[in-house]
Image (cartoon, rainbow, N blue to C red; front, side):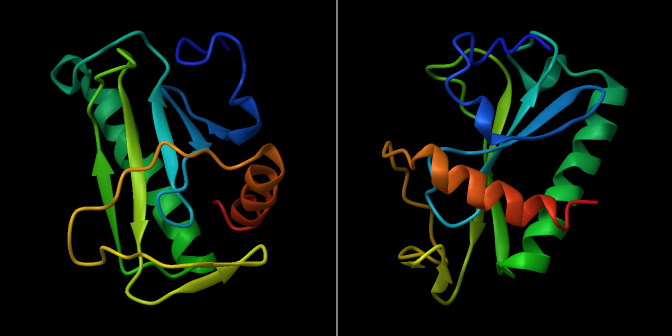
Length: 142
């Protein structure tokens, strides 16, 4: 698999699942607990360039990860961002939203902007955290 979005393989430890048209990964930027990214496998920049079968499968990818995260962390909702400002390859940032704090991996996670736009962070978590989170999600990812 060619990782157009990560040619040096810096973020490959976040890999969760490969679909026909999409790659699902744990995000190294945990804006809230359980953030993920869905990357198009085909080199494409705009949602409007997606083919019908890619759009249908995108719904399945979103449903799979939402169902898994509901099982393990029970977020109240999900926000999706698709911007493409610095990475010109179609991808969606999935941000689970929580009304109450969550404890995971020795840390208390608080969604300080519940009910409003999420806070965007450039801070990255380490490989070890990504691996722990990935294992937790993979136990329930359908």
